[in-house]
Image 1 (cartoon, helix red, strand yellow):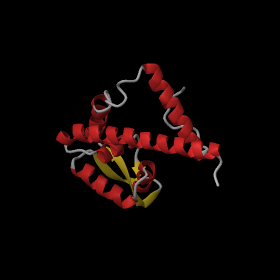
Image 2 (tube, one colour):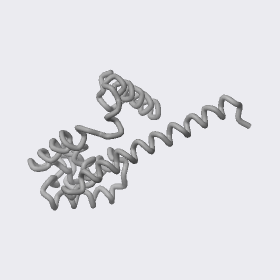
Image 3 (spheres, rainbow, N blue to C red):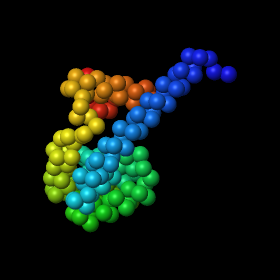
Image 4 (cartoon, one colour):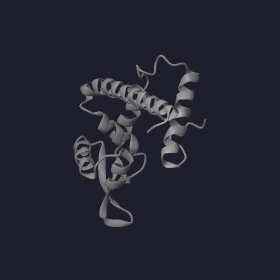
Length: 155
């Protein structure tokens, strides 16, 4: 049997998860709608963003938290558009690395400037509130793995 404080914590956690899911769903839906004219999806955008340096398909799958077979489909679509290229991995000829092309770097920069310049669910927050939300999310993300936060917030 749970204690009243455990039950309260469970209800609070459930409410937080519901809110996080709602926020992410709204961000996703808005971004998908704004990406649609370009023929790109959020998965494409995430992959372009994650490719700051050549990365193996497995490495990209791990970074995006998706199945490696799905990365193949995303890579095929981005390669077909000339946004990425497959290169031999320097340490293992059997492995291919994915790397941004010049067009891919330009699209990535454009997405950063245009897609994330405004995020409707976050636009109502002050700069101070955004920094605090980022700090709290960094802390929550680090606490779940024991690792240092990865957002590069610097505080």
